[in-house]
Image (cartoon, rainbow over all chains, first blue to last red):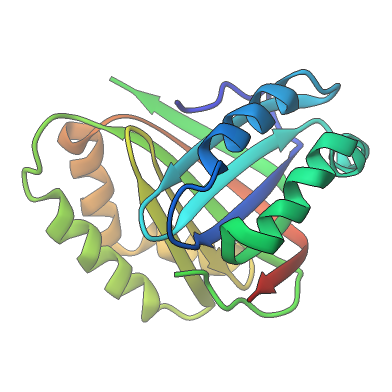
Length: 105
Length: 105
């Protein structure tokens, strides 16, 4: 659900995507990548939702943690499969979270 | 769909939320707020998806444009209604997009 991130600053990777038709192993790989991301040093949390558009925001301590996750071998293979099959289009944005505020009933 | 934003830097407002039961006028107001946001100076685009968790990311030219949208009267009323009824919880993160890259088949 809503990620419990620390006090800013920290980083967000906003990944917005549209999918091709059919699952074709996508959901299983997506779950696996979330599990793997959670094990990485500097990982702070992840939020995900999908309708026609999918948005996954992962949160990281710093740019170095993001770079190491990008270079992770299993993640690189998954991204390659994404480009070759699962995704019709995507856009990745690397952003520095400067402040946040929250509400809970 | 995926927002066509300019070359960074620009700002993202990442709004993650969980809803209370029932629509109660929420969808109509959400559409209205997106229409209104699009008219604001400095608005660059918006992306939205919802399952159990909803994620709306709006993109803005700078912090001043975000502040003006926050102070918009109709938007302030909508936010108040959100806290009083539509949302169970939310978290807003203000983030500076430092770089982005995209893919399209």
